[in-house]
Length: 126
Length: 448
Image 1: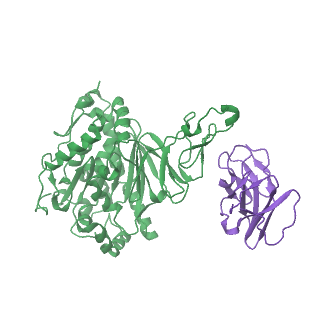
Image 2 (image 1 turned 120 degrees about the vertical axis):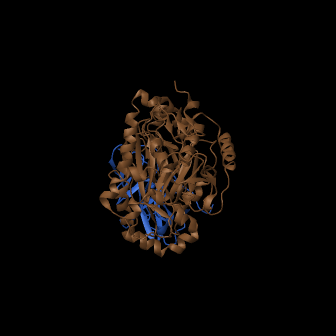
């Protein structure tokens, strides 16, 4: 993903920085797209909307982008913890803690995400 | 104690019945016979997409057979390395990971251990996850969409292992441009008999059919093709490398609709005659169509469209796992006709299947007797009348009413059981085959 590759200015979000994440057709239908960030984040397409969340399950270390997607709920394939992509809320044990949710804007089929300033974003064109 | 060396005498056609009952022999055949053979795992059509899996068995060992992200197929023992629970408890499905339901150790599609719950707190950095993945089946062969696996490094490559049986297997596996598919699901049942009765019969026994299966056709049909005098039919049986294939010889490339050949199947065959002939030739269309076993326990009946594995469950029991196979481009009506034919003939309640099961369970029952187990069985039919490359049929064949395949089956079984090396087994097989006289290119009248 690329930092600051935004043509039009996007609304400022305090403490966050917009980055170009991907094009809309890069996001798979039944799972997430892992972004090259630290901590890991991923983008999901669900019920016609795009969502960006912290990728790692809060129960065990595993990628939610690899998870099962049903509506706006992603289920970790390892131990069946479920999270709401809209709020980050943990819906099902063994997870109790929520995942972080990040603002998303889609313009001209490009997905932009606003990540906290302290997230590292790897540029595609280094 | 059983003397392993004395159990089988294939040169004379004799077997010791304790090969069907002895627990020590059984334990040894798991490791030395099944453990050193190629075993059927799955057909392409059972694993349609990434993450598609089935659980099957390699003899008694449960394995997961999984379609990988790169399209290949891999398999691993369905046993968690922590306390040995099944990693996956479903028979079939689609998954991205497999998590043991006991303590939650999780594995990827290849069987690598990817997550251990509470790893830092509980194992304190002392668990080498790379070393504790599931046990992988080291060798998988894809033969025309049929996947076979072996645990052994020593076993020859699959096509070498198949030998001349490839010609007979291709009569079904390579018959259609569109390829084959299995009908959905696996039909399973249990028979209280030793696995070798079933595997050997499907490889090398046409002899029983007009006797064991007499009553069904009498009740169901008066057609000559089913009830005819076996003295009047021609046919050949192939036996080589432990495998077997036998069948009658038909005058025409397509059978008229009858008890065995439904209307849909007749029409489909008629429409595909040139295609089938281009792929497998006239000889196989007419001469190769019936009972078959790829050593040790994968069998099929060509014109009845049924395939099965005889999974051993101790010396006295088997689980039969069966599928109907159909041309991929068959109409729904033909697929239904084939399924119904298999159900009517060779299924848990099939007219002929139950005849076979009755024989095998009775034989096993009789073997409870100590005198019965001290006896000797005769597997000498047609001994010494083998021919090589007879009538366009490659390898060693004999009359359809012979036991050339059965003798080969027991010989291969015994060679593996006593621990002969594969190199030695293949050397001896080659010497035996080359000593058999080559026959005329066409079968003489009455060569049956």
